[in-house]
Image 1 (cartoon, rainbow, N blue to C red):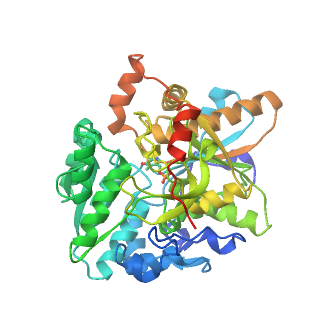
Image 2: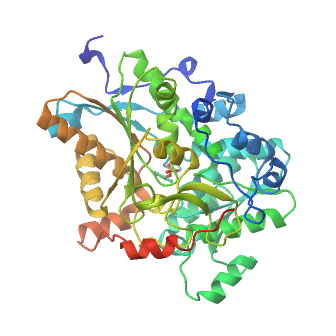
Image 3: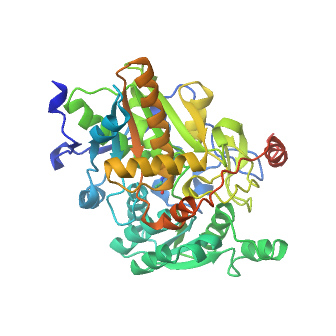
Length: 457
Ligand SMILES: *Cc1c(COP(=O)(O)O)cnc(C)c1O
């Protein structure tokens, strides 16, 4: 099909929408390492995990073999409210860059929560509801996950208790109020409502909190409240499974026009959007059917892949969660106040970590000020105001397209545009006022944090 026929936006009809999620692990030779019980060093059993997570989600978490999971009708109906998300051919950006590269992006910001996180939030809330639970607890950093989960719980009539990292709670009152619109209760973390919160407050009075600490509080609340379970918006296998909807839609849309990406790029916090975007393409690569380059983009302030260690570590600061084998900077690592809040997690999905360790994926880290410059250039030509997290992928895609300009290669680039930046305008303001810094941890900072990794027998 001739190139001109490719529209600015490729949509799918309802009939063309994926009916299944794809589980990348089914095609991996080296499976991701299991979650371990920090007490015994043994793999977590389904029974142990079910004390914390919903039963059906535990089954998905532990399933390394089933390639396709049917998406329940109720979830597909909810997806129809905001999906398919558009796959955009970035003609204007190509023109601006004067590149022979063909650039596509999958835009996940077209829903009120403003990011891809709703794809997994509705799935997790649905399985909680099916189990007959009263509600769920969770943490939120920048607020995207908490907002997405609030929307999903509001829709299904589930109670939702969100622990919001204190500095975000204070700096992002709008996010907080959106969650309340959907009926959630929002508690600044660390709080006096949990043992772990009280302990952290006693040890570090005046702390503005961290994601790891909020996770500990949410888990404690879930396991100590009857009828509640904990849900997590990234990192876990189940989340990547739900996010495969991003990649499945992208692949169906590209196949429709006979387009094959050469390189696929996504920002990586805990790895869920990237894992979801690349899933069906990585599956082809793992099965030897096609080849693609995959690039994870992370902030230089929190460089889990590029400077972390592949080891078992806690997922939370309070050390109450199971151990996951992943690229990590250490669960005590406190990243600088980078504005891409969604990318400030110390670890990385164990599935993506295994793929990276096995050489199937690349990773780069980028500076915050360069990210905001790329975000603005993008907004001016493509119209969308990107979330700072998403702008990491923009920057890497633009760099790739500029290289094509030099070499004359007509590469096809696909990147994930995970969300919008309306709630990040304080960050944009700092950038405009020249107050934004790119803080990069020293080797000593990272070594000090990694020295605290748990010993695993
Ligand atoms: C949470 C978030 C991310 C990072 O999370 P992943 O699990 O790595 O995908 C990226 N972009 C946006 C807009 C987010 O809200």
